[in-house]
Length: 377
Ligand code: SF4
Image (cartoon, rainbow, N blue to C red):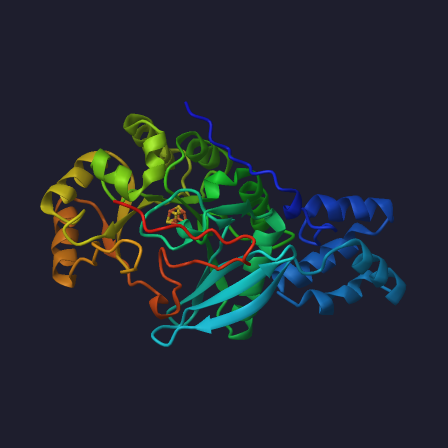
C-alpha cells in the first residue's frame, strides 16, 4: 500500500509563539504557572462555545499582569481577515485570511435556509493534487496549515454566524488543499472541534472531502468513527478519472476502490456515519453520458453512498470543458436514481465571488507565486 503522508516541513510555517488554539501549549503553560484548570475551561467555554472575541475573553485570566503574561506567551490570532466577499446571488461569502507568515487562504461560509450555516475550511496553502479544473491547483503547494490555523477559520465563521443568529452547524474540510495530505494537523483540528470543552461539535457534523488517498481514508475513518466523508470520484472510468483527478494515478484503481468500499460499509459498526458522498462534477460531453452513469452504478455497487452532482464552473484553465446543461444533469441524475442510488444536484453556492467548488485561489506575494499554465487534458 502506498504511504502518502506528505507532511511538508517548513520552518516558516512555525509561528514564533504558540497559539491559544494549541491545546498542548496551553496545558504546558497552565502547569508551568500553576493556573487553576477551571480558569482555562472558562476561557475555552467563552471562546469556542460562546464564540466571544479572544480579546474580550482575556479577562478570565485575572489581573492585568496575568493577562500580559498570556499575551506575551501566545499569539492571540493566527490568521487575520483581509477581505470579506459577500455573494449577491445567495447568502454565502468568502473570507480572505492571512497567516502570521503572510500566506493567504480562503474560507467559505455557506448559510443554508433560515437557521443553519456551514463553513468550508482550507487545510493547505495551495494544493498539489493538480485537478485541472481547480483554481487552487494553479498555486501549487506552499505549505500545510497548522491545526490552530484551521481552528481559527472555524472560530471566525462561528463568531459571524452567532452574530446573525444562525448557529454554525457543519464544518466541511473542502476548501483549499487535500486534507489527507495534511493528516497530522487535520486530526488535531478534528479532535479540538469535537472536544466537549471547546466547540463540542459531533463527528457526524464534520465532513472531510478527499480525492482519494487510500490508506489515509482508512486511517481517518478508523480514528474518527462517525465522521462523514466525501470522495471526489468525478468518473468511474479509470482513464478519464486519471485526467480529471491526476493524483488518482498514483494508486491502483483497485486499491482506491477497496478503500472506498471499506469506508462506505463501515456504518454497520459506526452507526452515526452517513453515506459517503460521491462528488461528481458535470462536464459537458466529458463525463456526463449514459455510459458514464452506468459506470458509476457498477463502480458503487454494494456501497453505502449518495451521489452529489456538481455543476462545473467554467474557467480559463481548461478551455474545452463546459458545464453540462440543466436537462442533461436531470437525465443523468434520474438514471442513477432509477438504479437505486440517492442522488442530489448541488446548487453551486457563491460562484459570483469565486467561492464555489474549484474556484478558491489566492495570489501569494511575488516570492511565493507559482501560478501554473493551463493543464493539458
Ligand atoms: S479540487 Fe481540491 S484536491 Fe483537487 S486540486 Fe483543487 S483543492 Fe486540490
